[in-house]
Length: 64
Image (cartoon, rainbow, N blue to C red; front, top):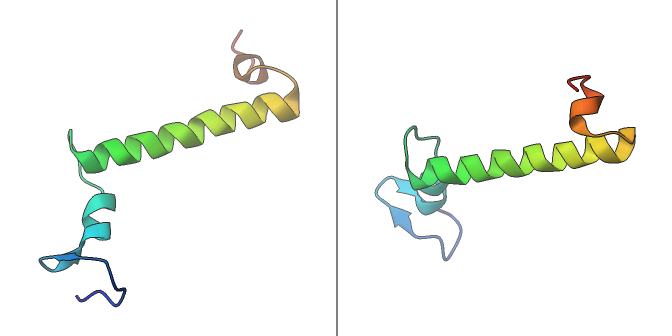
């Protein structure tokens, strides 16, 4: 597999972008990237629930 984009270095048969975003289990940099991305999605979702419902997330789900 070769990269058609200039400036993107290749590492073996996979590009640098594929190895950075790969889904790898365990305490790896790739897992930490995915953990951060999913945490950001969850935080923004909680803010949107509060914005549109006028209640906190726990009240919205009737947990308290």
